[in-house]
Picture 1 (cartoon, rainbow, N blue to C red):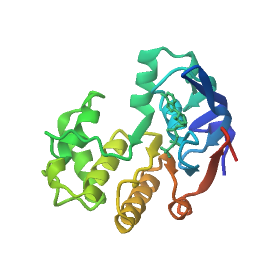
Picture 2 (cartoon, protein in one colour):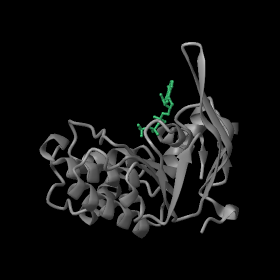
Picture 3 (cartoon, rainbow, N blue to C red):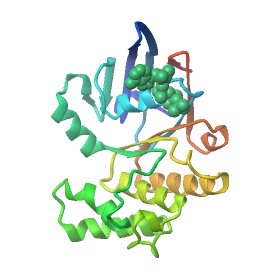
Length: 227
Ligand SMILES: Nc1ncnc2c1ncn2[C@@H]1O[C@H](COP(=O)(O)OP(=O)(O)OP(=O)(O)O)[C@@H](O)[C@H]1O
């Protein structure tokens, strides 16, 4: 399914090591991956295998990586901090295990804020926020603050926020890991269906084989490489 010619993200021999207490741990030992436009890829691997480290690398959140990371054809290893932030803003949406919503803002406002940064008029941002939240079944929760939402609802707002700027790539780190099994199923189904509708590509880290089976492709991180 991957087409290396127009990959949304391409990793070539990506490495990452951490030095701790005089010992060096090689977490990523030469990761290669290409994700096609619109493709949804599950990233499986046991705890500590480096899934979060890999997502942080792709999200251009941290330096210190070896190899090459290209996002939408842009070689990120050649970019400075501000340029990396611009690539992140223009092309990437994130969903984390914990929602990280702003507690003093309601659902709509949490989805509007990342859009305002791009300079879009507020009314347009609000329309987009409403559209996404309604598609996720939150049409009756638009004005609720995070503390007034259930865990599954909070996570759905986080999904809407990640998709707000129409990213070409969505990165998700255990997006339903904090939810009970039944809620996780519902939220993941809605998440995948919206990502498909929007045409974004996605790389979703999970421990859960059953959830991974709902995605287009599964890659496994083991001993620092993908299999
Ligand atoms: N900043 C850091 N400094 C030192 N070691 C780190 C750092 N970040 C991650 N590690 C180490 O890298 C390894 C991989 O961690 P990572 O969080 O990427 O794994 P993971 O597969 O996401 O695990 P989990 O599924 O439990 O979240 C672990 O051994 C971890 O201790």
